[in-house]
Length: 372
Image (tube, rainbow, N blue to C red):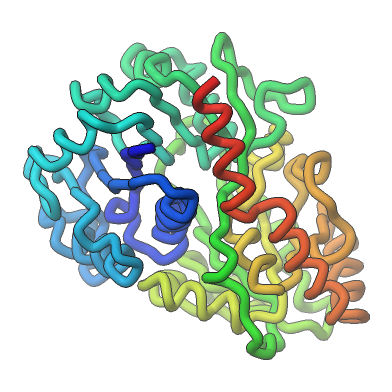
């Protein structure tokens, strides 16, 4: 099968975002499919060196190449700038690939255009990595936004409760099929000894969807005093109020530096003892069932994960290796349980990753649903 895949590697040029698209590309290729990456959002890219949006896509396009080239995909990508100029492979190369493509996969708005070459591909699917936010934005009824989603044959989401009675988010006439981020396990397994910190990589507050939901800052404040109640130490890679967090006992490092490359991001996770993860307020308050691609990477690296419950506990095993919390007392209990038998929890974390998130399992199911 020939698959045109749209992602947001340049728009958000950080390691975690890059791995999301990269693992789709690698997983699909390992299944025998021919893949090509395109990015066509119509937006300017973020340049972390300048710490600003810029009309010059050089940083973003270099980041795409640095992420894909080590895996033999350095000539399998094209970035369409906000002004319509193509970088990487030329427009004609994209059109030629699309003309013979069987499937178009749009991850997280990797393209906000329905160019003729995309629209002619026989099957077209969207994968929503921001459940609740996406559906609430659709529910506002902005005509172009609704029409954009109507043109897909299948809609997938990382929110396992979206469209069910367990979740308060309205979906209207749209049907959302649940899926997980696929993990290419051999990129994450490690024999290295874990570090001594519970860690996470997090964005304190995002600018997108500001009119439809709440961010991580609202939830994290519920747990801000956690370090004062346990001898366990924490390290957060965060683009947020580092001084405030430090006052409450959280060790912080800049998220942008930690995620500058795919290798930096992977190293940070592998050097962790476990993850301590707080979710965005909207994920929690709507019981969306969202589960983090970042948490999946921790598990695949054999690092236990203690993460806030958004309703995902109805769909995934938890209690060993992967633990849920909703209150600070539950978080404290989870820390004690992980540390009391770390080897067992680490082993179970890797087992859950293999059983639930392996790209060799997740992607065939996605493709089967896409063809339905």
